[in-house]
Amino acid sequence: QVQLVESGGGLVQAGGSLRLSCAAFGRTDRSIAMGWFRQAPGKEREFVAAISWTGIFTYYADSVKGRFTISRDRAKNTVSLQMNSLKPEDTAVYYCAAALTLGAPPRVRSEYDYWGQGTQVTVSS
Image (cartoon, rainbow, N blue to C red; front, side, top):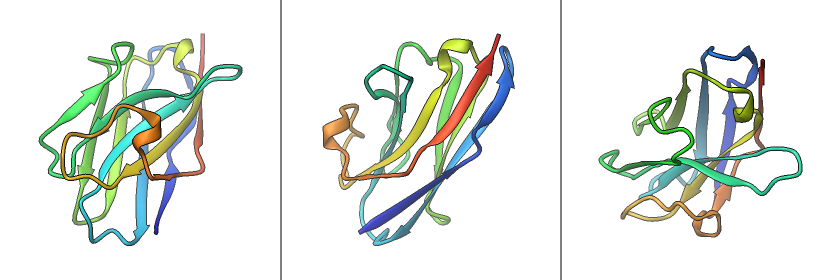
C-alpha cells in the first residue's frame, strides 16, 4: 500500500502562483509514476500533469502547459506541482496519484493505483 498526502492548496488571485506538494508513505520501494488530477464542482476529474519514475518523462494537459511544472524528489518520496499564472478556471480540488509502473506515466485516471485526499485550490478573479 502507498499513502499519499497533499499540501499547499489555498486561495490566490488570478495571475498568482501556488506550489502543491505530495508526500508518499508506505511501500515506496517500487517503481512509481506520479500524477496530478483536478476536479472542479460539477465536472469530471481531469488529468493535469504526470512524471515518470525516473523523472525523465513529463506530460501536461494542454490547459496548463507552459504554466505548471511537475517535479519529484525520489530521495524524499515527494512530488510537487508548481502552478504559475493561475486562472479562475484552475479552481478545483487537486489530487495526487501514484501508478505502479516503470514506463511512461499514465494520463488516464483509471491507470492510477493510489490517490490522495485532495487539496483545494481557489483562484479569484
